[in-house]
Image (cartoon, rainbow, N blue to C red; front, side, top):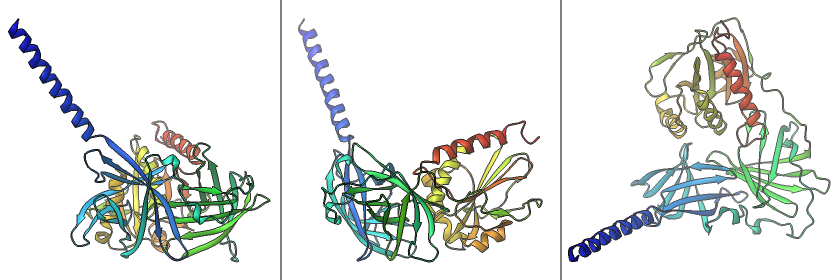
Length: 425
């Protein structure tokens, strides 16, 4: 009896140690998400407001993860550790830019465009552990009284960008409000692509929205008029600004993206030979050799290309489909462009090959491909199994737009039909 009692005590102690150890392990690995309001002062005229999420553990306040938030979008930054030359902790975007922090868990530092090494100070204020309680734009930026009678805001507008110029650019604005958070989200579509995920705050009859992905650093200051029309200023980065106007229009459409860029001679067989971006080994693109071929004209510097690449990556498992990205870069030298392309490939986990196509110039694209009126990165060319051109599509409206689901569903069906064994045989 005596031995049995001691044995039970010993087992209880062991069990207690295990439970306590598991508690400590679990506690040390508990993730804590904090949300912050941030701003970058690009110039006296433009301060960009956006939001950041950080993740740390209970054991350490050091950031394990940092993400830029634009509405429903989270752009994960990648830690490069401590840079001895810059004496900063580096977090990189998918594109050629980064945040440099003075310490591991403190948001004092600079935002840097690494392609030209321009830097801008930014300010971050801790707000709450719940993003739903954060207003992207502080009340201090609004001039409208908060109790002003609000005019109904349409969910779709026909826009004139550069509205004061002789040749304004057509666009479409889409808005929606989250009734739980009162946050406004949406996007602006143009002929070459959308402005991706916009998010912001309304007070009275002023709506401020912005987006920030490292390349796009856009702010839209919008006044809603008594008749429901809108007008405002679009700021981009350090120096660009343009006025715009908008009229509610539920049926407005842009020009057909399938009818803009044309192939010059659809009877001549394409013979494209380009270096693989990393190795430099020459690769011949197989067109008309029994598989459907999808050619993507893109650049690692292009956020709309990132959205299209993400979608094409989902298609890469289709049988009888070859996808090739033709990367046109800011630098005409492959080796100097290598890291920029690699960053995008790694960020998306791309499963299809990227070929280096040269400098991002319209003349270079039209020299490589027998097409005319090239207007946009990205543009894709789709060929059937026999090598006949199915279509050319200029631009890309991504997941921030209301038409994205319909487009991607129809495109999947098209690829399914083209790659089926009976098609084209």
